[in-house]
Image (tube, rainbow over all chains, first blue to last red; front, side, top):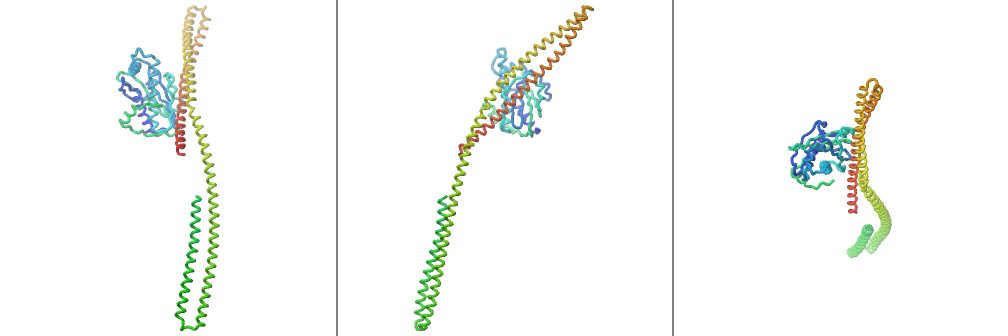
Length: 187
Length: 252
């Protein structure tokens, strides 16, 4: 059973963490929007990570398609030309984005839940995603991140709780956020 | 503790001796006052009272003085007995205290020895648990092999699927050619239909198998990730325990 304020907190964290992890010097502005129908995501692949606690298990997904727009985003972020970007470097970069996305999510949740553990990222094809409901998922959230140039990524969160799950998110001031963005990320 | 007992004993004994001393001083003062009063009375009664009366009075006073001395001696005896009893009580109490202190010291030493060995055992356990990271890395390697195997199986499945598609097309072509051959090709048409039927079933089977492989990818990944994340969660808890043990070490 997940409380309403916990659901709101998860959604807010997911938005903030995805935006922070996608933001680069070359692509600082992202427009975030909720996705009510997960079937509309339609990306080729996704990076998957897990956060485990005594109270819950979270699956955090970053969806992407290996297309021209996303290749340009990765190349710009790495300060390379799109043509000279090897595919392995493209996937490695997105795995790192997924790692930062889930890592900051875990770090934020660490304020409310002690002893959290996080996995390393794995990449899977969209065909696997339809089986995600094989687990007892209590709540799922999906968001879309898009730049003005049309680069698109999606973020998803699947929550399985092992009992009552409740927390109230502490609102952060802008100055706190600036300090956090500059902090070294350690998982 | 011994010093405390000696101090308490000294206070009790000192009190008893002080009481005895003041009592003796009081009796001596009474005797002196009595002698003074007697002389004064004799002086006052000279010529007023007969010698016999004076002797009788003197004898009576002597008797009273004797009684007082006897009472004083008796009280002195009682106080000496009380003092002796107090001394015995003090000795036995002191002995009891010393025994109790020895017992407590033994218990404390036993507890310290047990706590020390428990702490050493706990530290060993914690160090052992901290090596869980190497186990997680081993699982990670094995999971990667499993994922590679899944990828290989998906590739094989795609090849199989391509062969099946080709077979369906060939069976269809065979049916067309059999139809062109007319009566002579009737038997061949039956065979071509059977082949096409088998190929269609194989196509369905291949699709189901591919779907199972995709599911297998997700199940393997999610299960492994949960084990990995839970392992790290336990590691975090063990680190916290280790830190508390170190704090405990610093305190003792």
